[in-house]
Image: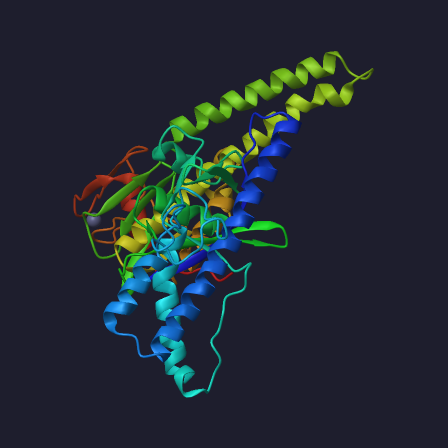
Length: 427
Ligand SMILES: [Zn+2]
């Protein structure tokens, strides 16, 4: 399936002085405007020449010759080399401008033929001189992280920057905006980076002085078939943020994330914050208080973003697991009532609520339904025989059934119970 995504680009002027940056922006805009103009003008020449040739009864060979020279850049000393006059049409060097227009013009012409062009029903349609410029695949994306793994971990961070290099001519920054609003496009670009989605011939236009990229991507035709009888159960835990299991398999299991890492970084951020706060208290009032508060703001923002980023990563993997197993449903524990299991500790250190919301939001994109189930006893029941008795969860990680002797990882047993539960909690 081919999709087109509209992305705003701005000329990249990182590390430049104000003056240099302005020059760079002007340079890039000029290149684009000239290139767009040249290609559209050439397209119009090409299509009208072909139209006239067909009207005059040109042979196949003559049309092929026309296409050949129509897809060439003009040469200074050889006017017959190209359809276009040297010095009159100035293609951008490095971008296949002439070779990109031929096939478009030919297919547009045959469309118009169907509409009755040669029967006088419609007039030959030309292209606006500010219409999008085809750039084929002379563009590359890159990002500000060391590798794609690091990109994935920071996909929803405000610090993420994605750049696009057009041939060897200009570099743009892709305008991503608010991580929440741009969650879908970020996920798609991630798949372009890991080559799950193939980038195709795309085009660029300037609209109201904004540079717009129409990114064409090919999404593999793997139709996701969701099965009504497949349910993923997600156990949100302390040691492992999320453990996934299926209602119809005793063996398939996925553990997502590591709480140790999460807590370590989080604690680091918190103690750094406390230290700063103490320091600020000692120097209360006086000049430059706002300035003194700035590092604290920055730290709070990092902390906030970190939780969000981490939750995005976990929720995405949960939904990927459901998609991979064709599950129509994801069951999660209803965590609105915390009093029973002494989880205030978890609540303070982890935004489970946010994680649940993110799972719901991402699942929705695939048509997967997220249901909340009653969390009561999900960790104490045997997922094999249904037996419930106190003390079957022998430790944080071990479960052993006192009736049938089934042993399993305790989180996995809980996740399976959640997957099998029909005790839904209405919103
Ligand atoms: Zn049992």
